[in-house]
Amino acid sequence: MGRTTLADNGLELNGMETLCQSESVWSPLVDRFGRTHTYLRVSLTDRCNFRCTYCMPKRGIEWMPSKSLLGDDEVVRLASVFARLGVTKIRLTGGEPAIRKGFVELVGRIKAIPGVEKLLMTTNGTALRANAERLHRAGLDGLNISIDSLQPERFKTITHRDVLSEVLAGIEAALEAGIPVKLNVVVMPGVNDDELLDFVELTRSKPITVRFIEFMPFSGNEWKADKVFGYREMRSVIEAKYALLQRDGEPSEVAKEFRIEGFKGTVGFITSMTEDFCSDCNRVRLTADGRLKTCLFLAPKNSLRDMARTGSCDEEIAAAIHSGLQTKWAGHPPMGAWKQYDNLSMVQIGG
Ligand code: SAM
Ligand code: SF4
Image (tube, rainbow, N blue to C red; front, side, top):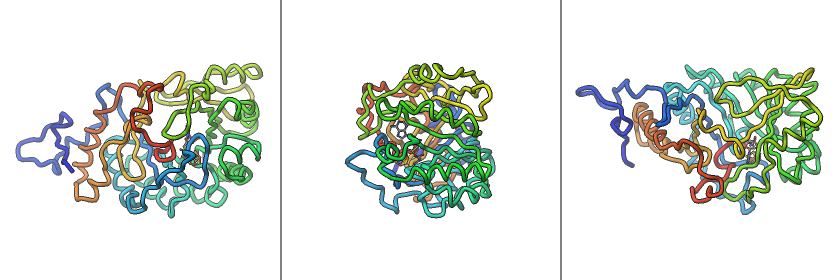
């Protein structure tokens, strides 16, 4: 494996300084387009206890061998390097992060890293009834829970698991534990678009955010443009019944968020397909086997795991992150041509 040099990143060493002694690598993660990256999403596993039709390929996937996955110490070390590079927000995802052994303890260790202000997790919710309280105590700051239908039979058809009641109990447990909750709903025409208003109704009495997500193309998920239920269409269905009032968010927030007068929760839309938010992107990703991914839609780059396992110092890993980031595009590849970019399945990336 070739070693990354500081020069690759436009950084310079002083005199006899070696890369491992260099302080100059610890500069913010700014890419070629001036975007500063402060948000890391870490996949804890590519495995999952669900088989969601829009995420997991029908043919299945070849699981990463266990020894190729980052170990707990490696996750913590790499997260610390990112934190020294200015990352303040980390999201744990997967596959299903909660099927990883010891995930609650890992939450506690990552939250303790200096610089990590916000630690979040995206989960299908099945482990929350048993673990929400522990996650809260470990310092988790928020949960995104995926739920695409409130109807048991339909939930089963989408996820191939008959566990809607478990997930609903998990949502309640998270709220009772005092963890802020967002629900992720992938909306697809003819599949669950008739439940938009039912989901909005949940926000009347519960302090949750429901986020409607446009269906995105990934390897093996049989995406077609006509399977996307677009943001404007969703809004018009909802606005036929409720007035959506704009909420101001950070520019890098992916969701367009709205409130409804008198409702405790809020409603958001993730519009990756119809109105992308690439110009404000502040995210980088780490796959479960430790590869750096600069964009949801581009193939992963260098293996930080290999560097960690072959004795690279933190500064060398930091330099490799800088140089990987310089390959990030201004926007994502055109969706019509996404296949040519050798992407992974969503379950292998982590949303
Ligand atoms: N297993 C966890 C879960 O389901 O929440 C975390 C991983 S999952 C890949 C992360 C998020 O990606 C979920 O909210 C899921 O709904 C979303 N997702 C998966 N495939 C998608 C697709 N093709 N288009 C849009 N969102 C997708
Ligand atoms: Fe698993 Fe989440 Fe993908 Fe569903 S969306 S198959 S729960 S990783």
